[in-house]
Length: 251
Ligand SMILES: [Fe+2]
Ligand SMILES: [Fe+2]
Image (tube, rainbow, N blue to C red; front, side):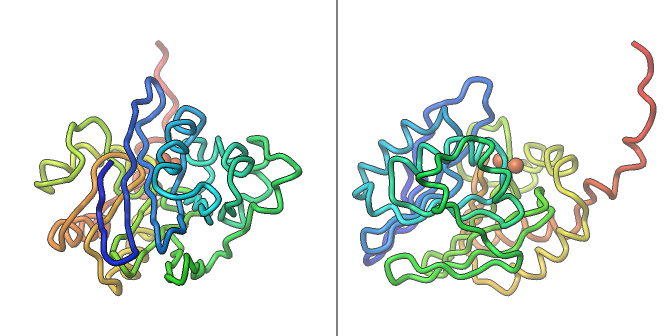
């Protein structure tokens, strides 16, 4: 567990990762304001038990107000029914995925607490503190959001900035870190056009930390800027599609 920010009644906590086997490593983050909680991308069934135990150690489970689901992937939403059944929280999810997420199994008793996020994003009030959900469509999902916390100046970026395979939690040298995220971004992110629009939007924010859903976080102004610049210039997805569409050679 790593406390990223702790001032007055506001805390940003990076929850402990208890391992995952074949399942991709995934980060769970929590924002607590005046005892009320929001959990970001709570994860699938493998993470559920340990994550809810950690939440219960930080706040009263009944004070968990929101589950923020950046997009519809199983490493984010697979356990949403368990979360809705054991807490009073609302699950916030792109309106594009509202009719699809219930296929993971959402009980009739709790389905009214699955709430759509409009395409433009929205503001959320957590115990009197304002958080903003930002559009990040096509990075990588068609209905995709990031969450910015103006109090801690942390941008939670979901799969954008994801890295795999290194043994550190915070990036220290940007160029050394690039190989751990490059392949993922080239294949999963839709196109540079979406990255450019995202970069333009987030350059208007005051950001101290970018915290992705997988791998290491970018802490400090310099690394944050380096990451945004890298995204601004990265060719990915459709930009590279001609090199992918070939009939495979026979084995
Ligand atoms: Fe994803
Ligand atoms: Fe993910």
